[in-house]
Image (cartoon, rainbow, N blue to C red):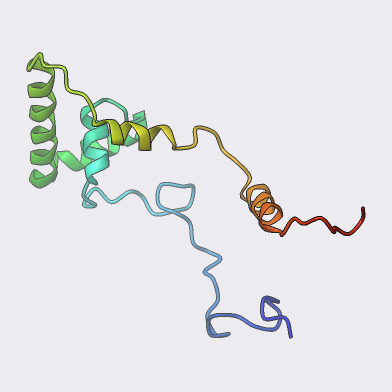
Length: 132
């Protein structure tokens, strides 16, 4: 029996079905962005650094007009950014962090090809091989 055959086995109840009418927020037919959803710390930093796109900025602006908590986070992030820029000291990242960052892939790769290479390299290699 092949347990991975979706026609024979499913990890959830057969009564559960995907919602085919679902549309993601902000997409055509989806619910609009709710301005009550708080900005993540990453969004706050990107907002302060000017890295958000036009639509994201307008959504963040709409939220900041209603939310004192997020507005405070943006102001704190902006103040911290200003202090660092005005300090005049050369702030550098630790060398071990730079080493870790340099190992992050900078291009996309096919996971299936990587898995095939790992499987190929893990096969035992001896004097007697088939096909020789």
